[in-house]
View 1 (cartoon, rainbow, N blue to C red):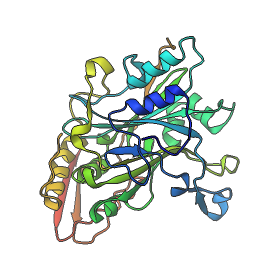
View 2 (view 1 turned 60 degrees about the vertical axis):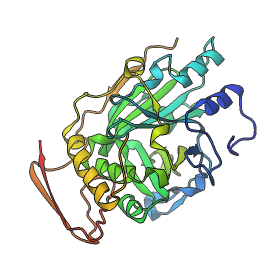
View 3 (view 1 turned 180 degrees about the vertical axis):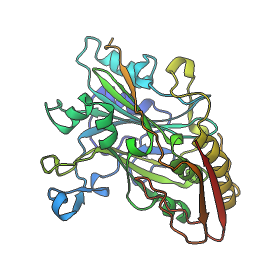
View 4 (view 1 turned 180 degrees about the horizontal axis):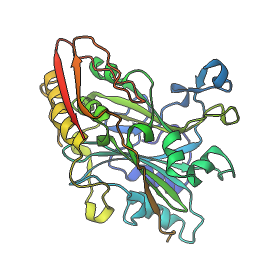
Length: 348
């Protein structure tokens, strides 16, 4: 069922939207599907934010929603759009054989799950990118600029109270400061591979939420943060809603065909939170089970640590109802009901 975002789309866009394993549905009713939520759902920096800190509804998106993939693999997958076999790349190449291709944006959320799930949101530019604009600066800038500007707004539209409390309302994160990001850029696309497992805090939240994924409705908005008066008000690049995803509906991707990103050996945060996060999920939700030619693109990986824990052992004590700020951009709240937990983390 087509979304009401636009009444009639070019044939190639309709094809992309119809061929995904997870269907495009209406925003108000999209079980095991995806949709484009209203822009006013999100609050962004207003025209005078630097002086009055007032935020305004997000309004119209800069990009058009194109597709959503829910995938799994034997290892973490990334750099998807540089492979000709990728379903969206194939459609675009066939629809525009002589060049002048539309510019595609992909945000690949690599989840630290047993089946290496990824939730990938795709968008397309509908207008030429203006020289000197914030988007132009983002595409032409270096990783330091991109890491300091790419922002995620997350909202749990529907889900258990414990997940809503863990994420918070309209949670905002400067992605490159909290997580390891890999950028793959060519003349016709940009892909941002976001390694959730690079942050112990984010991994814990994902493991908690993953146990409830079949009952969650999540809105994610991507934008480039406005930091000067001339850049205000903020505009959202694009947003995606996915709802009540079934674990077994994830499409199997062979890494030999689509590439892989990152070291195959799990990082310390990933290993730690795979066990710790699963423990939280089982304690809070005992029944949960984790199942689980364009020019050659250049790949950039941010070089900073994805988490900012201090050296040595970090002792964190959690008691019922306690709110904990772990010192990252995203204020994470662990509300552990009637549990008393002590966590000791040996940092490298």
